[in-house]
Length: 421
Ligand SMILES: Cc1cc2nc3c(=O)[nH]c(=O)nc-3n(C[C@H](O)[C@H](O)[C@H](O)COP(=O)(O)OP(=O)(O)OC[C@H]3O[C@@H](n4cnc5c(N)ncnc54)[C@H](O)[C@@H]3O)c2cc1C
Image 1 (spheres, rainbow, N blue to C red):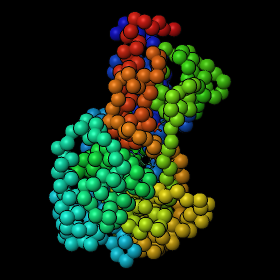
Image 2: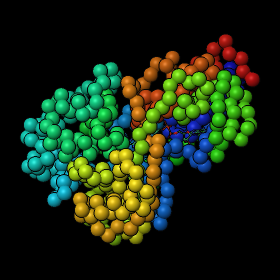
Image 3: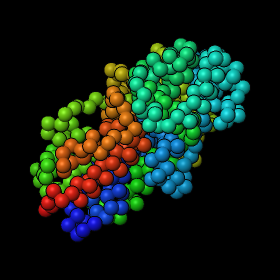
Image 4: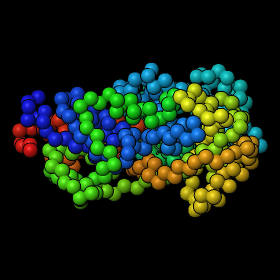
């Protein structure tokens, strides 16, 4: 790389995972990128607060350790990953049933086989789908025609009972929407990742992931609390009125908000996560609790303190996820959730700790992609897009998009057509 290229001013808007991966790749090419981030720290949608000594992730999230990009970019050992059990505890109002993959975890064998959550054929099909997707390549998955996940499950022959009891609450918690409208491509990808690996959370909470990525950066400059208003070809306009000259910009945040005349607007899926403390953890193991009662607000629950955590309060920490749209104010929401915890999950002594109302949790996308050609990520000759919004709502996608955007920036600065300031 020549000196002119090396000194090219490459800005990245957004210090989420996609922006951090873009920066890492640019450093590897020899550049010293500059990240402009609106909030006070890196991580984007992956943040962890410590409150009353408990670790509170901004929304219940997990890393699927089979993600190819996570394997490439993360040092799993130093994250001290803690595994969730590969199944779920399903609450149907009267009782709870452990339901999972007995091939991964033998203790699920009897409860799964003899549960009334679905028919024997359903259970056989779950296993069969698992096997089929293990050997199906991701490019094949993402090139198939898209159906909604619900249509896909019906066509695969699953009964309405197993869809209601298991698939609906499990995948609603992942897709953050209650109706299984999300693309079947995403369903197959996520199911494959669950089948080949585990759901894990770093010991210090999910923010340990972007913290590790940030720590790896040696030549990147960060400007926090720096909100970008607009990105033009060679100018970045900040909210505070300042203007910056740029040779190339990677927009690692919603481009429809920043790039004038950007062709499409983005819709988002929202969710609520409420944290409570309880004197004890009645579930007692790191397993996701699903609510099979369709007329309630709670979708899923998890006790983060059932895992090893870097810091913890005196009791147990409970996270509750709501994906249904509701109009309740916070006081009414907390009251209703406490009643539902009592009625459906048999958890009575709950003290409210904090609510995360996440209005932009996952992008609502049609035509979800695993990756895109470089041409599709280029806005113009001096600007590229990164972010899960460009592919599919996952950490894996955020990482791929950052890698592709850095490749484009490198190619653009190498092109003799461009001159740099
Ligand atoms: C509740 C929840 C649960 C999830 N569960 C999972 C899960 O289990 N597994 C999984 O793989 N993924 C999950 N995800 C998705 C995952 O978190 C995202 O795919 C990923 O973090 C997206 O990274 P990103 O860099 O694309 O975007 P973001 O993390 O959104 O980063 C964008 C950054 O740009 C900054 N920014 C925005 N506008 C501006 C501006 N004008 N100027 C400067 N900076 C700006 C933002 O502050 C932010 O830091 C979940 C997300 C949520 C919210």
